[in-house]
Image (cartoon, rainbow, N blue to C red; front, side, top):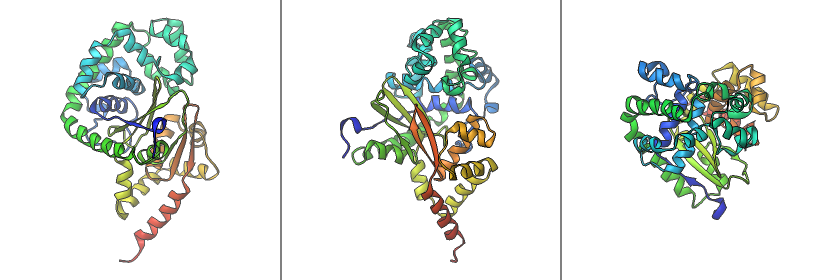
Length: 345
């Protein structure tokens, strides 16, 4: 039975979900996203203008505020907006730039992050030029925010946060709260039975998390907005793992036809077939798979999410490096599935 350091915290709530929804809207919409999540083109003109002030492709930015949710512990999305309004403007900007993210402090330098948060243009330029900082998406995520003052940054972020909540999120909040709470309760029950690694693997459909000494806390956060994506974040001493709510149970409970459709969807793209063939030769990094397919890393990541959701690919590692591998059990299960699909009566 797991004890002490091996335990995992499970947190859920619509405050996390609101930020993850904004991330999904500001990124390439995931295939398999829930029906309630609007396309950017479906948003009101006013909300589109407010999001454009943050950046049309600035989705990654919103994930850097998940740490504030951990700290503030708001009871709902509305409470999150209220609490954000009270956060010191410079501290909010420090969260956005990743001052409290150990990986970014290592990649970019703590002094550079602090200077950019205070408005130093030279430090800001260094951040935008980095290919490692902000998962390689610093320019898309921060180019419009970095030149602003702390006060202006706060105003520019709060405006679309409030409007998105009101126009696109609030009507779905009760149902989302119930979905996320149910999954969190299930995971919490399992914390008494499974080791940290086993619990993480079960929730994330096979992610093999390699512990990071500087991050003794692991926080599991179920989400619906960005399914089937697995979102890996850091905040102070915590590794935050946001996973699709109920994804593992849906796959386990699906009948033969449903599983066949999921498998077909996973393989219904030439680039995904290329990824499978590359991984048959051995594990690879995201950069290697992007090179193999001729895709941007963000696009290759999206394809890998579908292969993982179908149980064909596994992921292992941490901020020091991530590797994808072919899941041989998944290949065997796919063969059995096809056999069951064509079996008589």
